[in-house]
Length: 234
Image (cartoon, rainbow, N blue to C red; front, side, top):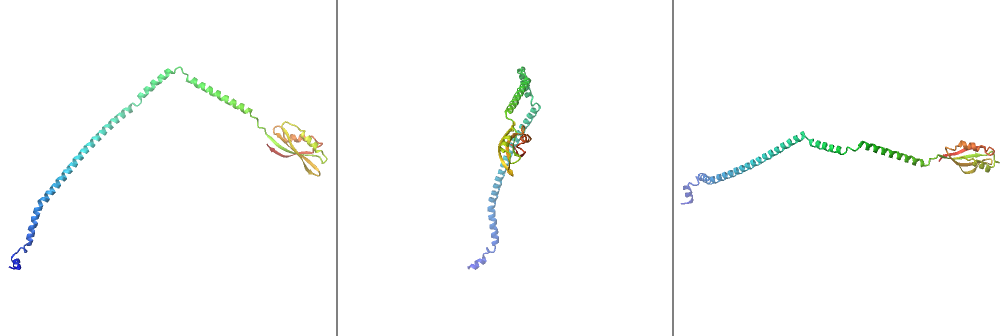
């Protein structure tokens, strides 16, 4: 028998879809139970883990509840203690101060506090007076400041025949308390006439320019006039 005849007589290839379907069902039945059991074991292990975690959370929650309750109890006790202290805060201190003050008064009955203050005031006043007296004495010993002036006088003669040496001698003969004569020189005026220019230092309270002019012009035989050429405070 030829191959073509065999294929023609055997109808296996024509029913291949049926064989494929049967093969699929076979493998599906073979693998089905093991896959299902695997899923069941995985689900069971997941449920056990979830239950374990829930129990752990419940234990932690119970512990937290206990801590919170303990804190509330401690806070309540503290509030009660504060209220008790606020109602009577300083009674012991007042008693202690009262007893101590009574003891101090008993020990210091013979001490005159006001008398001590008066003695201190008198001592301070006495020291103040002594200091004022010492300052006044020290100030009185200092020399008083004397106001002085420097004066330059122009003394003119009558003419060129006037004896200028004699004129100067007359001027320097003027003596007064607080007057000190200085240097002098002859200054030409004109036509052979010279004037005497002489300086002096005076105490302002004792000697003035009016006094000098009055005293010098008394020598009328030699002096025509007296002028103040310069006046400076020292």
